[in-house]
Structures are given as C-alpha cells and as structure tokens.
Length: 304
Image 1: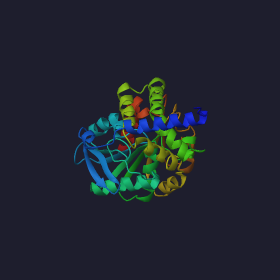
Image 2 (image 1 turned 60 degrees about the vertical axis):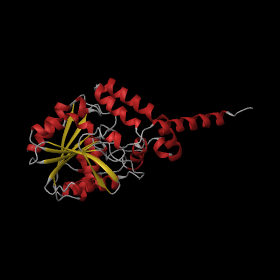
Image 3 (image 1 turned 180 degrees about the vertical axis):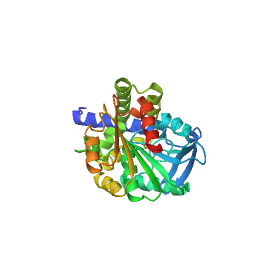
Image 4 (image 1 turned 45 degrees about the horizontal axis):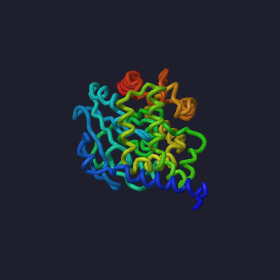
C-alpha cells in the first residue's frame, strides 16, 4: 500500500494532536488544592486570587500579561508589602489556577474579568492599578472606562502600540490551532530557554512558566489573546487618560525584543503627561531580572 507524503504529514500531525490532548492535564480540584490564596466564582468560572500585606494598607492590583500568571509578581509583592501596600494578584482565565472558559479573549473579555473580580471581592475604596505587557493594555482600557476608583496607573512594557499583524498561527485559525496544540510546548520551552540565556531569567521562574504548558486550555487562551487583544490600538484610551489627568508611570526595557523600542516615544506623543522610565539592559523579563530598579521606580511614583 502506498501513502502520499501529504497523507503521512497529516496523519503524523493528527497523532501528535491526539497525544497532546491526552497528555495535558485539566485544571481540577486536586491541582488547585496546592494553590496559595483563594478562589471566587464570576460569570465565566473560577478565578484564583491572593491578597498580600496589611488589611488597611492602600490597595494596588497587579494584572499580569499574556503567558505568565500571577507568580510573575514574585519580586514585586514583598517590596510593595514592605512599603505598606495591600496587594491583590490574580490569574487571568486560561492561566495559573483559574478556569479555562472557551471564549474569545478580547479586551472586553479581560475588562469584564477585572470588573467582576473587584465587585465580587467588594473593593469599595480607591486603588492603584499595575499592568505588565498585555496586562498594561488591560488596565489602560479599564481605567479609561472606569476612572472613579482608580488613583494611579503603572504600566510595565505595555501593549497598545504594536504595528503589523499577528504571526501566521494567530491569523490562520485552523492551522494555527493545530500547530499550537502540537508544537506549543516546544515553542514555550524554546522561548523560556532563550529568556534564561539572553536575559538572565532565573531557573525557578523558567520552571514555573513551563509548568503552565502541562495544563489543558492554556495554549488556546494564549492564542485567543494574541488574535484578539495583543494588537489592540490603545491610543484613544491614552488620550482619555490624559484628558482626565490620570497619573501614569510607564516603564520600558531598553533591550526588550517583544515591545518595540519606539513604544515609549509613541506613548509620549499621545500623552505627554505620562512619566517614562527606561531600564538599561532590561528585556521583556525585567520584572524578574531588574526587579530592584522596577520596584524603586514604582514606589517612588506611588509616593509622589
């Protein structure tokens, strides 16, 4: 019996896809039993969250980015707590210990997620928002729509000024989904090793990041966010923030290969009242590799 090359390729991909599906663990009660913090139920499922620091301290909410859940704040939480802040961290849907709803992860999805978290936790007093990468875009848009409770805004390597189109995996749904489910683990391993070698991200953080790839729903969440959130234009939102006199600190890494180097300039052109800090030698992993400089900049801004 003769098999065509195309048939063999498709068969191999199909088998790899089946294998990937069966080897990824569902996020369940057994896994969640080891999670720190607690869970709340909102419209789209369970959200994992954690409070840190003094009960009566000023509140700051940390919103993580595309691929790495709330453990990314490992080096920011202690510094903020020592300074007297009450810190709230949580995992976006599809990451960490939170649920994996099969929904389009666009900006509206993340704004609704954050809004429900704050309402369910009954946070009634004013608070600061800090967003990293994709999280920077989420808090920018969120603040432009809901100014009343938000004091200051901190953005670390924020999205909102990316040009061009997503890569082919994001543009072509069928092929992209197949490739992500089959090769996503390899892609993440390669990226994590590159971050470790090029930027100096430590092995513990790399191991935590790679652990995410074991769980079902992670890759589909990441891919949906790339398709529907990462390339969202935030210029109008920044114009609104300027009009409303929202205090903004934007931190960029001078060696960041993910967020273009001209982003700081583009942000300043839209909102010249935003404070810009550039960290020398810092890449996308700066919250880990340059945590001292990041934390000093954040606390200096919050105390002004």
